[in-house]
Length: 264
Image (spheres, rainbow, N blue to C red):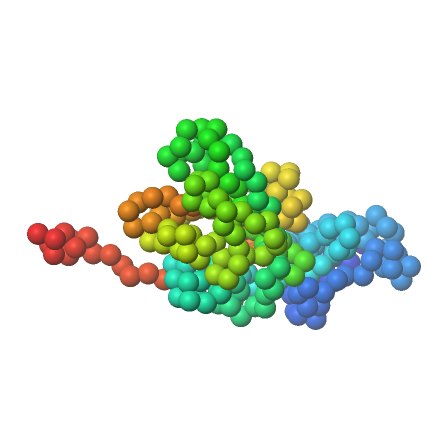
């Protein structure tokens, strides 16, 4: 016979998976279930921990136990950086992902801090600077509602961004069009970029910041952004909750043999 906490967890899990309890809904407080005769405080706590381990809910102080979005956000590849989105409009990258996913958004779901810091080895190497050189770090936490989805910290050379909106710590994107539009207006039009992805176990700080379920990994992103002449104008490190994103890429398949033939 299954223990009481397992029966309670299985019942909630079935209601969540069937859609009876919707994503974003808050489960009853532990004390309310205890008073309703569902078991002791320890029984309900174990049941909620099991739901969290299955990735069905998130629990945090102040927000209680909330059903997770089961459909991951579509994290666009090339299309999220379309110049028409940010140069001619106001659809910065995280908003482009929300639009493509059919999800709502608010600009203030991106918060940020800006500081002048010493470049780490990886940041310095990306910018071609000596380790310890001064760079600006623009660190963002992006949420969907109350749930964090990822962090992104962009590093810039001071001479590229000093006095621009990029170093303004006001919450939300750096004005209309975001950071890429700021660089464009300053004469640094982005031309191409590289992205590297790898999965890893999160740090204790990341578990707390992203409200990760026990055992959930993160996907770390390294993005290097260049102008047409090869100048690096941004190096960014993102940390994404692995289960909250589906990575989507749509691109033309290259034919290097054809390209080489045309250049002769």
